Length: 462
Image 1 (cartoon, rainbow, N blue to C red):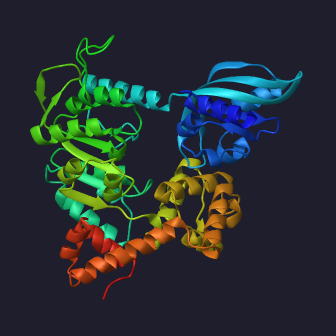
Image 2: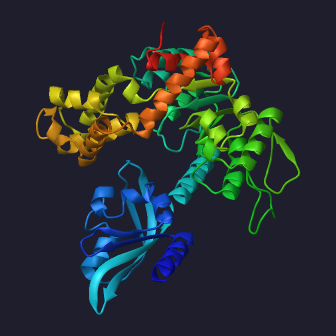
Image 3: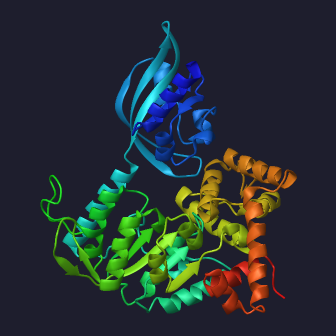
């Protein structure tokens, strides 16, 4: 019966719409619910049993509200906290934190947190757009200080260079664009470059992450609101109206609710939008670009992407390969980031040690270019020599390297198993089409250039 009550208690806690995080007196996590994991952009198993600093390395004893309560034994109410998780994502929360006592003895602390990262980003975005409208300036992505161009994309990878050449040609079209690739490969930089090279370059470029807002809020942000559509609603244009004459970029498209995807499909077909709660349609002139961090076919199989929307967006599609498949780019990007941080940190680091270069080339880079950039930034903060050394690496990098080594020593990981299955499936399609790439791509229902990339990746050339 005790186990049953524990299960009921666990279900209730996980059902609460707020993050709950509890630590013991040493700072190790003893409880962490699913909402907290979602807010912090991590998995519960990455946190439970670990010290706070292992998972949120930018926190300190002074900035962590949980550790502050352990130190003082005093309640902290509605205090904002800003930090990064182990994946380099910036998190903003408002926390109320309590000490935990058993028989007057302090045993730990528990925190109830509300994530306001999304609301803060939205507020900043709306303020920026209002400023742009007032000053008549060009709108750019809220996460950027300027628009990127193709000259900012550093690569010597033949496949990626081919994608850039195709994108340069596609920039003169008004057809929708779909870009997919893992997190951190530079999808927004890629679509910004297309916009910058297009006839719409003098118009606004507005980006919205579809995973960052609940459905109703995303609907009103994208398409606007009319007075009375809900309590307190006023006449307000959405991002599609504000992007008129320019480009709208929808990141993590597969996170958009299916009902909204249907609405987006109608907008693509009719070039008209309708504000939330209004019967009036508004003509728009906007080019739509979208990005996903997973393959579209997998998203459709999981019913996270409508097939009709995919086929409408897939007129021009681009696959950006992960950094681990572009080994030749690692040194080039490393040197570029060192040069950039030399300027901002007023340092004179000349390069990296051969041993460090070998580690970089053997590392899997799950966070791709973003992870490489964050790694170099960390090392530049602590480097004491004229070159970066292995000892300067962040602790999380060593864990990643160890995990990769373990994968090689133990039975194949799910990722390796899936890659082998994919290779076999592609081989079967090629055999059934007499190695005609266009026919094989049609059989697999993937773009021709994607199949060409995978053939190169798996070294399947005849």
